Amino acid sequence: MSIRLLSTPLRFSGAHIFSALVVCAVLYSFGSPTANAQNRVSKRFPVGKNVRVELKNISGTITVESWNRDEIKITASLETPNANVYPKLMGECVSIDVMGDNRGRGDVGDVNFKIQVPQDSSVDIETRRGDITVSNIRGGLVRAHISTEGDIKLLDISATQVLAQNTIGDIHFDGGFSRGGTYQFQSTKGNISVRIPSDSAFRLVAAAPTKKIALGEFWHNGFKTLGDGRKFVGDVGDGRSSVMVTTFQGSITFIRR
Amino acid sequence: MNCEKCQELMGDLVDGGLSREDKSTLSLHLEECLACADVRNDLQSIVAFCRSHRGEYSAPPNAEGLWLRIRNVIEAETQPASKASAARRQGKSFWSGLMSRSWELSMPQLAASAAAIVLVVSLGTTVGLRRWDNARGTGPVASSPRAEAATRVSDRMWQQQQAINYWNQRVETNKVRWNQGMRDTFDRNLKVIDQAVNDSLNELNRDPHDEVSEEMLNAALNEKLALLREFSDL
Image (cartoon, rainbow over all chains, first blue to last red; front, side):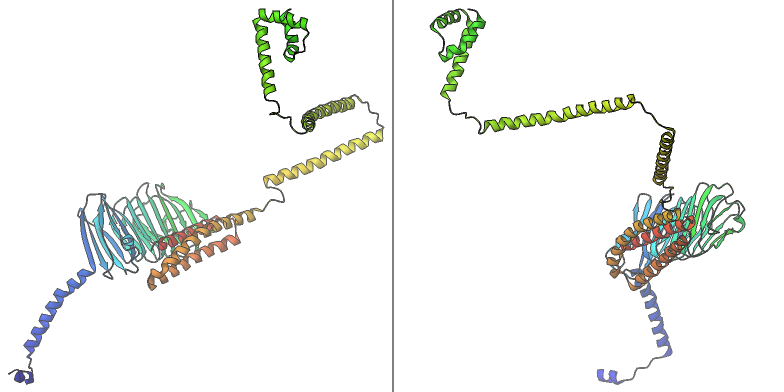
């Protein structure tokens, strides 16, 4: 019997093949989230207003955006499953220290973050490498620091203190300057663009050895030019906030919003 | 016999050198005067002690030499004071002699003296002013502002370089743990910062008073230091 069965050629109809394909597709669709789940960490923290988020990453892209919930959601995509990512809530501060959690463990690959926070949050992010995008934040502080390469985009920001620094990469700020606020943008090799409302009032110190400083409609004759056009110092409006922009090998551009 | 006469004869009494008459007179007084009797008793006990310990306390060897040395020391201490007072006396006499002396000069001698005084005063003034200028750093010996600025920059560079060397060593130790991509990124970025440092230095060499270049140099060096420090932790 068995011999007969083995020697009989198998016949498949189109319906059989189609059914088999459907079963494979269903199995794959169930299987792939499981596989993804191994490289993804997601955590939510219920928080109040004026919360602070601190992230110390090694490598990977970071996106922070606001949402209309009193909670913080952190989603981390891990390039390799052996990276440790342990978000912690300490008082009114959510902290993610990829550097500290993986110290001495060698190469842990990129960890890409998407963080959703209440609009009034303060955001303090630093990484060794990778792009940072922060959008729609109205808190006290927005800090984006990249030790080496990566672009920084700060979009629709209205914080009283903004610090953005990288070595290679562009910096773009789009937002408003608060009264008494401080704003610093520094890149070694990158272009810095600042897009602000036309009625902005600030004291500006802008330095670029390349002499590529374009203040657009914010320029006026009261600006002091130093170093043969490599540095501009002056007030726009009543100079209620302090803005410092420095690039060593790039351009500085101010654009009206 | 009174007490004074008694105590004069006390030594002879203890030595046994008194006449019979003096001895009987002294004995009568001693029987009546308790104070003199106490003196006699003390003296007798001292003499008795010395006799019983004879030979135990010998005189120092070469006693004369010892006394000679003591005397030399005393004389040496008293001599400078006397010399100083002698010198004061001599000086006083010199000045008083000078002031009381009368001078007679001919016209040529007077002119020569006046010229000598003017020469000495002008020389002294020139030397004094030059020293004063040097002390204030405005004289020809003081370094030029250009050299000062260059020194200031090089000093700061040296200080920063010490810190950079320290962190660089730590980075080199940890570098083996990084992946190739991170090593390439670090080297590429360090090169960019070094380029910024060199550009600022070149500008400063052209114009040591260029404040913008000095600020940029500081910023670039701080950035290099920060990069090394951050990667030493990786």
